[in-house]
Length: 445
Image 1 (spheres, rainbow, N blue to C red):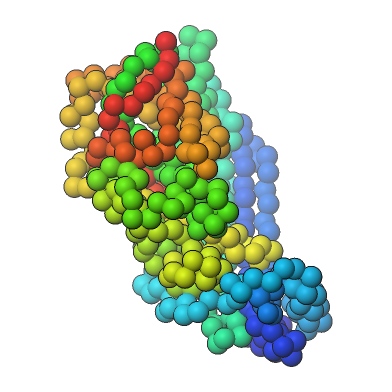
Image 2: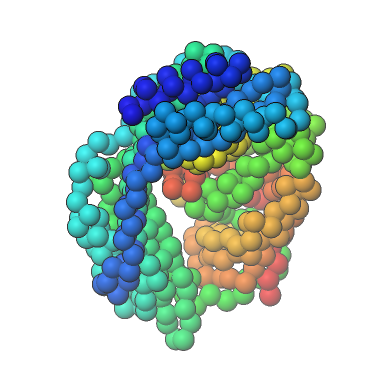
């Protein structure tokens, strides 16, 4: 059945059931190639299609999904969602979004030519990354995994209030993880890069960056315990913001699981800090015209000049809090309900180039890798992270250090941000810039 027919059938079934509702239709195709030692270890080509159905009746929400897009499959999914809604608790905030707004325009999200790229070329790209890594430096002792992945998808969201919007998206990714060894010591390096299609996706550049990340850590010694300036690389900043994003979820705030609860209008960071989530950024990996509820993607400023302005919202939390939608009800696929999450969460960059920022540091540490981000307590904001990187001496990167820990509280960390550099990068795991933290406690030797 064509997509329009599926939508029409689902909406008709919802109306006959006497309830409000929504249908989320998805068709996708993905490829994953993994090579090691010049041999293909895994090759997966997958196609998925299905629909997620949500119903709202008297404040009671139901959800069901199906991979069967036949008339009977859709009717069954709607009936199942209605049955589920009858046995859940009532909440007046459980209803469709009010005004979803017009979808964001002008985004380059889809490359139709990706569907025509032969699997053989995809294997070649994974192979090229591994071969380049092995030949780049004699200290590269092994490649754990070199991979190529891509996907194309079509998503369509329609509801009984008249919303009907769709868009296509594609992404191609090359990643590699390798080990470098010298004098009996080994260090790991991982890197990935992405594009909308395979054009301009350079597997050699990915390999060389992974090699750099591994070899620069060779010969590391334990860091010295002290309070000092700390530079975070864009990689680390992106990972850290990803781990902190749940603090700004309205759902976590309503459940009392966020340190940011009750702090709107209060300072929670240094005056140099403005935190923005922008689901319509033209360079963002997670960009799209709408979220998983059909609400228009937009730019949402969460912190401005250090002051907390608000939270990331879904239709449900916006109804509960009596505030505006932000377009952050995200869905991994049609089998999932919408869940609040960030799109392209980043610190607003300054005009300061990263090299100039580095030159201004007399003594400090440049953190290139952090471990233990999952241990951050979103309710208290306390954290203790393992880290490795390079020392900074007289404005220059110097010897490698590891076995160091950075501990504290999220509020104190955000308050220690002195400068956000101009080098905003849209990485596969989120946007990140070089960031200078002042007077941070670093524990080590």
